[in-house]
Amino acid sequence: MSIIKPSQYSPLVLAYIGDSVYELFVREKIIEEHTDMPPNKLHRLSITHVSAHAQSNSMLAVETVLTDDELSVFRRGRNAKSATVPKNADITDYRRATGFEALIGYIYLSGNMQRLKEIMELAYANSVDKF
Image (tube, rainbow, N blue to C red; front, side, top):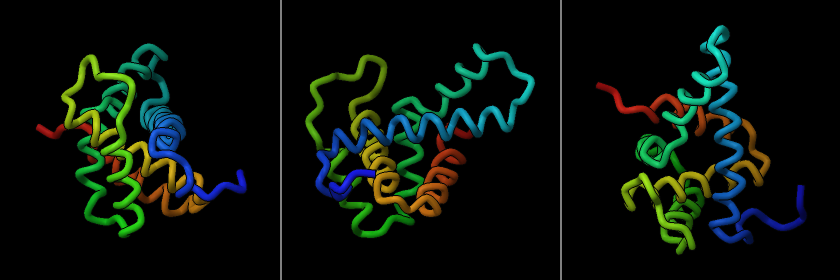
């Protein structure tokens, strides 16, 4: 790991790493749950958990269990001005998802793997709309 403290990274850099960390977690969960599914179906299923809308749902679920520092990181990520504009996402979902990714990146870079797993498990369980 780096000697730079996680809080010193820009929120968009935290979101960049957090996106990768969370997507790998989701892929591992889906493979555990669907061992005989072909890769193209695995991919489509993973998208339902990592889309901006799904990550927005995840953030709403985990927000209540976050520390003040974690909430601060989320807000910095949510409020960061990105050069990209969402194509298939509501701007509110997109910004909340960016904050969620920044949070995941922050916890990952902090090295607290137990906390990371706890947050990602809760996020995964609440990412898909329940009908």
